[in-house]
Length: 344
Ligand code: NAD
Ligand code: MG
Image 1 (tube, rainbow, N blue to C red):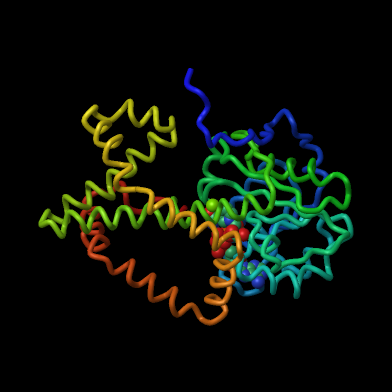
Image 2 (cartoon, rainbow, N blue to C red):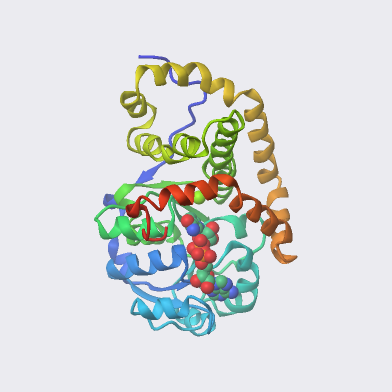
């Protein structure tokens, strides 16, 4: 056995179905606020788990018709919240301050459990709940479409849970029961804090999952096409094939990936990978993490959203107009099985 990796942190507590009292869930009156990616998945899974659920939305908002099509009778937030013992806030993070101030704070029952799927609003002080309620989070580690699909297949997306405020003395058990209702206990529910969930989630999407991967793919594509290789070949190599590798990593970590690629690929990975993602990349990651920890990222994004998202829209256009997108659309058109897949 090798010595443990020097960065090995303490193991967090993981809960599963054996730790849950399902009657705690069925005794609650749950209101899910918002019916987007997470809202739809939570509401449908909880309903299937036998919970008493209502969906609360803005009248005339875009999700109202979708909720009705799924068999809900949506109600307004102000109407639903006074009766609720659990309120799950699944509106966009940037809107939660206004939603809370205008429609939640003065309508929450004492002893209600106020839940979030991301710690952002509470951690950065956008939402300051009253002392009379339990405050916790249940954050599925996957997009809403997957949270729903896995549940219907008898599986579950792992979740993080954290208790920020325990007014009733039962916040932990109630939160775990909710995580069970969305399917999280099937895969495991890890206990964390609002700070750790928020900061690691933002870091993951910025440095690795969304920002990191897309920049790596784009840089690889540009390096090949700048050197005169065909864009179609570069697309297959740097973007299309990524799924194969990611699936192997997802199923069995580094070991499984190494098992399925050639020894030539293994040697190239081991000797060239650290040259591409080098010490400077780690320093950049550290700088990005610092802006998350000191609130700079949150302040910037909330201001961008408030001021009309001009910079965000321009950057998004630049991403979507990249030649890799054009060639990718042409190549994917030949693969009918990639079309019309369900939305994440
Ligand atoms: P979304 O944008 O897909 O959906 C937001 C929903 O809220 C929509 O139904 C919208 O109509 C509604 N809404 C907007 N403003 C509202 C208001 N003022 N009052 C009531 N409803 C309002 O959002 P999402 O991606 O599901 O994110 C919801 C929460 O889940 C966020 O806290 C997010 O960080 C968290 N989360 C998302 C994911 C994900 O994969 N999308 C994963 C984990 C956690
Ligand atoms: Mg995330």
